[in-house]
Image 1 (cartoon, protein in one colour):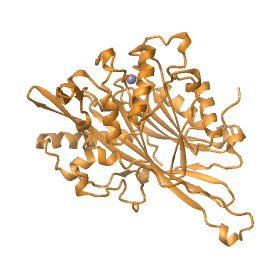
Image 2: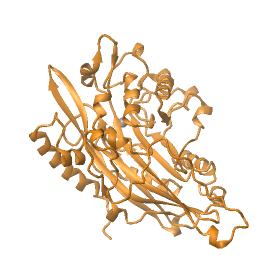
Image 3: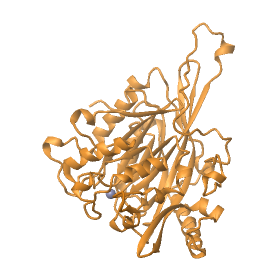
Image 4: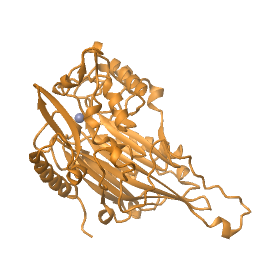
Amino acid sequence: MPRSFSPSWANPIKRLISITCIGLLAIMLAACSSSPSLSPSPTLSSAQPATYSNFPSTPAQTASESPGASPSHSSEPIRSEATLLAIGDIMVHMPQLPAYYNQAKKSYDLTPWFTQVKPILEQGDWVIGNLEMPIAGKDLKITGYPRFNAPKELADALVDAGVQLVSTANNHSMDRAFPGVKRTLANVRKAGLIPIGTSTSAADQQRLVIEDRNGIRMGFLAYTYGTNGIPIPADSSFAVNLIDLDVIEQDISRLREAGADVVTVSLHFGVEYQRMPNEQQTKLAHSLVKAGADIILGSHPHVVQPYEEIVVPASESEDGQSRRGIAIYSLGNFISNQTGNWKDVGLIFGIHIVKTEQPDGTSSIQMDKIIKEPTWVHILWKNQKRYYTVIPMRTALASKNIPSLTDQDYKKIKQLYSGINKHLLQLHKKS
Ligand SMILES: [Zn+2]
């Protein structure tokens, strides 16, 4: 079986993936107001001039040079940059819904969950999360644990918050069987989201998701360890992408051949409520970086696990060049009704990407900054209903102006924030 590092995608473009001191450059999000109107253009980084662009992106830049151009004219490399933001498990447990139901309209409005994180998510050029459940229609009954089906308004709320792509490959993909897979895909697409990891047909499974932002083409893949024992019918084996190293390697190759500059792989794996990745997770992430993946986005444990810079030395790589990648092993719960033991803490994890195209046609990709904005799901009881807000912790502590939060809440956020930041660095190698 051909390995993914065939020279076909690598030539003529020589790819040099490098990460510059991500530990040192790991940055916090700049202070931004909880109200976007007070802060017209909050930037993700205080260390960098405001070069971030919002979706939709500016037109792609190209590196075309006329062959006869003099060296002095052709010596200018072209630099493009864009930021990926990733969030974890998007869940709807039944207690989350009553406060958001409009009897007259017979519909939900779930946008209030995300008002505090929206100004941050809107700054991502690509924004991706894990949709942990079907959105299959209310005629198949809206339910929570153990077999979920979320109202379709969830997809609208995610789009409103700035989410652009969702992994739909997870252990709940089959909670409404294959019809649920098809309906979910139709519903999320109708809302404007790009689904990854589940499919309506064998041909659909072969589709390549490559999203160009500012001239940087990012390819997306998604896989799950399983579907909670709910069988995927043999005649619809394409419905849910299952983790299989050979298959993922081939998919990475196909993305590269199709021109992806960066490959991001969402993996639904690990053990629930474990705060550290197990060996299976770390081994798989390393294998995938070796096979050409640049970014691994983990989900499923429902708690945040640390991130890691993965280095594959030249001696171990397929093409004789060293490779680097970034794996966040679990992004935790972004929204859910789970509380305690870090289950209500999630993470907006960002990677700033720079593409440099040389006049000779070669290009390189750098992932030069990590962005970390831990989140906390605040639940307010009022009139026997529960009201949920995803709180960006660093921003909340800086502004202290979120009306629903008490002094006690801020105290708790401070503790959680300090704890999760330390935890995120547990796999950092001391240099
Ligand atoms: Zn899961």
